[in-house]
Image (cartoon, rainbow, N blue to C red; front, top):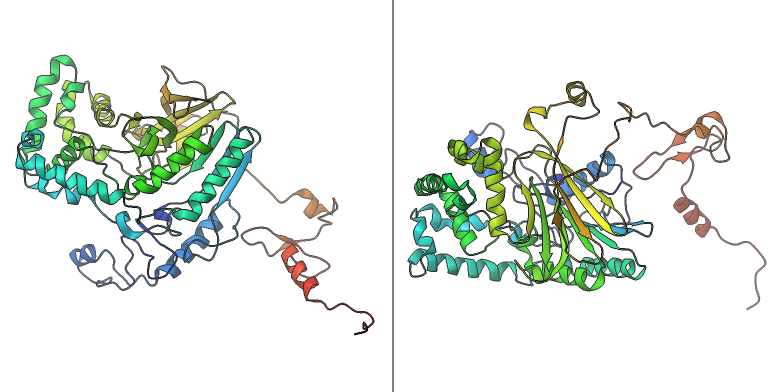
Length: 494
């Protein structure tokens, strides 16, 4: 298994650049101004209810917990202030693909723009409720938002900000180059967060996606909604959409300079680059263009896995639009309306779903890379696997395929949505529970290595076979012992 982490394995919006002083997180408070007995309002304002101590201690403890629970071996090296392990992994999948991942959080990530909020920078939208003026080239509103957008874009493309740093960028390039040279069709980077330029939907223009006979009524409703005092976030989203400003500064949209560098690597040093991500809690699939631009020359594909339970855009947008679900074809029509709204303002977005949680699965050959998104309907989301299996009469909860997307080898960045799913199927014959025991040779005395000896020192990487009642030594320990011994023999003449 290859796995990597993001911020929530540490703390929300974690960052670090190798020193104690440059490491932290959005809600990490070394000293908290509130405590467990403080009023709830004080706890919310402080973002904590107890001292959380030094970030390096917290993050090393988090790394240890992660490695002890995940089926991964500790890697050599460090990650910023984390000395417990490295997450750098490269897996060569025969002559088909190369997989690579490494830490993107605390090795070389700057605090800015990780902690910034684009919605806050478009804060005037929370006051200006005449959205029509946002689209008038002569209005104060339009000119103000154009200026804000220019400032935001300059900041996110500033080369002083980094997510992975020069060393890891060079490492990725070397891995991709080697894979390309060997003739493997697929170079796959598990990047933790998303790289596709994600602009929020423009609710002022979304009525064009409604059924023809309902468009006028939908537009009337949307204009009324946007004029309300509680629609500040939606108005900010409209202003951002109108200026093609991405909303998430914690993913690659906040680090435009490095994103452009990586996409240059994808174009020149990979045959067909696939970039995997998550973080946004919803399902997304992009064609990525050279330089990280909204359009242009396709160079890679970005596939985003949805969350398991974490809320995404759906809980924000659906309640606001649901009063007119009758005009949109019911609840599913509302979610389709939302997806269409995202695709309207994101030319590279091939698939987006904010309705249900789930996962995606991939089938790759020398010619094609097929991704199918599978979702679990909310009514089938239950708290334990036994209930899921009994209700579905299968090994998991019932799920459905939301989309099948295909990328063709030799066509960088190609991503086509297929009419139907079905390329990927799942076995229904697996046991209800796996029982993975220690190999029989260790317990029965059979085999050359085991000889019936018990296992000891079972740490993050392996167990040691106990030898004749003594604790076994690892290969590293043996090398140290051997190196430490003095050679015996006759003294040489000077």
